Image 1 (spheres, rainbow, N blue to C red):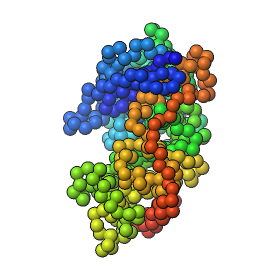
Image 2: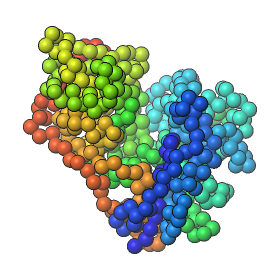
Image 3: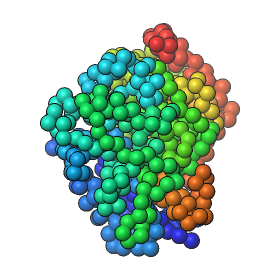
Length: 483
């Protein structure tokens, strides 16, 4: 038996799990918040990366890493860490879905010749969160900092580099690289011309190493694996494979699935990412998921989502004819950025709070089912769906999701899946270095404990609800998925 650690540096905290290399059993855990916040108490757009190291050190205190042989690093995606030629940060890291870069994203789309050109080049269309878009913002708004920028890293790249003592060689993995907007999952190569298009000049990018490769070894002999982004690490920690999809319920929603090849999508609805195992991870996002539920709860004067769920369960599938198109913040899937939500089917008998509550849940899930269908329409096999997020525990979600999605739904027990995925990567790299594991086959760890929900006899009812939702969508936004 060996011992490895996985650390996940999220936007708000660092979590560390210490695991058995053979089974994946979690032996010890550590946690520490990040000592940064925005003046308004929310998440900042600019963060000194040293804060990540301070949090890491605190989380690893008390001998947590004693006996550990290898460490894997997962970190928040889309954090741009610009370095100068000497390896110093040019400015604080630009993190998260940075709204400052929305105009820059539109500029980049136009500069390359449209959405289709970007989809063909790197498998995704620039969004405000992506590093390539942040580079464009930097060039336009902080030209002196842009000129000083010589090296481009993301959060997990920077943390791995720091753990190794800032060596000359800087590395990343396929998963992290695929989210930058200047690396193609289809070709496995960078597009330096897109960096120059965004930044105004060339810059160095980290070497992309394989899923089971080691980034290096510390002077103390501790192996550090390639690392990856949070999304890829969580998928690896969950143990998803071909035929599996993950639906994540945050304020917005996302659907991703494992696929053997990269998908180029000229509509921009699919973001073609790479995963942490050598496969691909196409992702479709919706702008409206749990924010739909929260808005409905506020409208009905309910204190929380649990109360909304209880109320919805007093209604029946189909919400007595009420249909909610949940496009409250515009929508990305389908591409309707300037639209609003629609409530259809109002009749005297349907104008009751419980029916509106049920329509909110069904509308949210039908929107995510539309996103699943985008992947299915491109040949992605979906037999089993992992449902993540706190809202996945709500009875109204679990009652409707299997029949609306048309597949088995798995609700994993809460766990630090990104950190577990990072630990599994460390175990893989350690095993390969010791000659006990094949670089093509990750360690077979125990799957996540979960609740399994089957569509059962309600499948036909769920499909009827989907048809009703689709009919209202087509009437309100004809051809929305054909544009």
